[in-house]
Amino acid sequence: MIYLDNAGTTRVDDAVLKAMLPYFCENYGNASSLYSFGQMAREVVETSREKVAKCLGADASEIIFTSGGSESDNQAIASCARFGALKNKKHIISSAFEHHAVLHALNKLEKEGFEVTYLPVYSNGIVKVEDLKKAIRPDTCLVTIMFANNEIGTIQPIEQIGKICREKGIIFHTDAVQAVGHVEIDVKKMNIDMLSLSAHKFHGPKGIGALYVRKGVPIFPLIEGGAQEKNKRAGTESVANIVGLATALELACKDMKKTNEKLTKLRDKLIAELTKIPHSALNGDAVNRLSNNVNLCFEGVEGESLLLSLDDLGICASSGSACTSGSLDPSHVLLAIGRPHEVAHGSLRLTLSKYNTAKEIDEVIKAVPKIVEYYRNMSPVWDELKKGERKHVI
Ligand SMILES: *Cc1c(COP(=O)(O)O)cnc(C)c1O
Image (cartoon, rainbow, N blue to C red; front, side):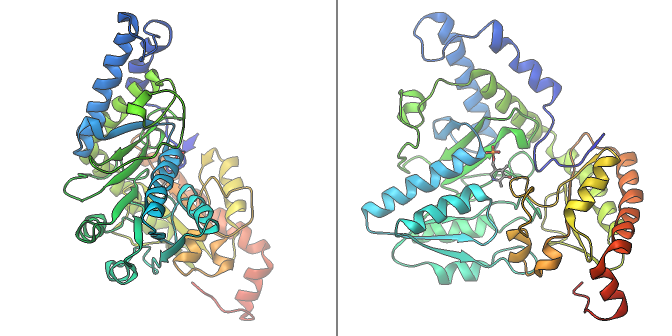
């Protein structure tokens, strides 16, 4: 199998699993118990918190463990909205191509009377700081803009956004689920107030994430119950998962430069070779993008068909976000960068990890053009394009 869906989820690193194992059957105590068996779990939760904080340039007291990226996003947005509403500030600024964990949380607030401005992301998939400046109002309570997009991998000008928000005294949250462990992040230098991350996007386990909340930023808990996480997130600490998250993040940060160098080469080879296919195009900026993300459109081909044929060859890929596959809706991300509907259906996302080899990439480079040609030969749309009855859009 050739696994190229690492923006969907990643393989757990062997070293991560090894670090987690003692916390299932040996040190399985409840981290909130007072006896020493429980306190052993408490200690490892706290050292894990310190490790996570260190990788982000944060203080350990600013890290809340959650069940993953979706919860962190929902927690951050719901809490800011609640504090905003108390001050009669019910305007939020976001971008048009956020993950659904952010978009759907915002849609819910819109139904409750909040107003949301969605900044455009243009054809390169990057927001403009000037647009943000213009969108800010006296009643803006939150700016939430993702660090790197999960479909097309484009990286946003986070440090500039942070600076503007700090100057205006507006809370800045970033969904950094695709960026943490892949891009250098310093929450202090970047003036980030809240940041979401998820372990399974950097070779950690699924079902565990964290929310960074800058000291002084109030949090209204999303999950009610016990007093865990200093009353900010109830629920018995998932000790093994927390250890897994911290170990995976430490590893990813330690090897980041080396991994990115390797992946950038493989990524650029994929892009160079696959864009040789006529009427194909790369989605999103070629430079300001994650080192592991390739996202292409092929005119006259359905993304779903491409996926199924790649699957027959043992290649795992995606045609947009995993959450929307299964439905035939075009990707909101591709529409946001201005791809027309018929093209937004035909995207292929290949996302790499440190486990991929040059040989695997060569196999994909051989397979994709044949599959594209096969489907184009069967496609009535392609037929019309060939005969000139329809205009090429890429
Ligand atoms: C995967 C992902 C999420 C959701 O994280 P989960 O841990 O799966 O809930 C949120 N935002 C982005 C950008 C993602 O890539």
